Image 1 (cartoon, rainbow, N blue to C red):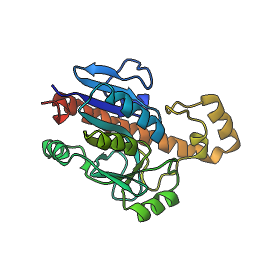
Image 2 (cartoon, one colour):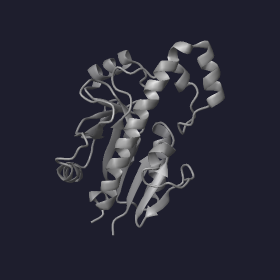
Image 3 (cartoon, rainbow, N blue to C red):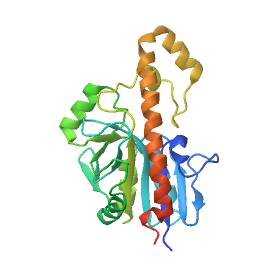
Length: 238
């Protein structure tokens, strides 16, 4: 039987598949021949996790998690099954047949599943202006920080891969500086520092609540999607 590797940046994203605590950067077998690794945020973290999964002789990779929108074509809670991921001048196309199987299965579903391009960046794309400029430059409707690294490893090793992302922040939602400065590489909030920062910049509190609400909605979409995918062995392990 084939083996499948799944990469999530954050523990919250990994909970779709495994409720128990998982050691970071160390792949675990969550079901027979399905391995999960929490990479942490960013290109280098995802690259390391992908190579760790390669050591387990996986046949395919999935980049799984939340992302942001760069235009009004996609909204909070939408699910993205990417056509391709872009990084600088590189474009990595996902497995077309694999994607088509999933899209066909979910026809008529209440979930909104879009087939859009993703762009991976080195820094968080935090403001509406930055998102708009990124869309104009790349024509990618979605932005994340990890998928290109996974795709690069998959292509190098001649593996199938797909990218599944749920939209948290839409194109007009601002990610406050106090959030960016007070989370660690696994998305964990430094509560005391965040609260202290908010005392000096209370105008960002409302933005934090909006972001938290959007983040929760995105995770819910991922959770619903994951239940059906697991039933069907991710439409790959057949």
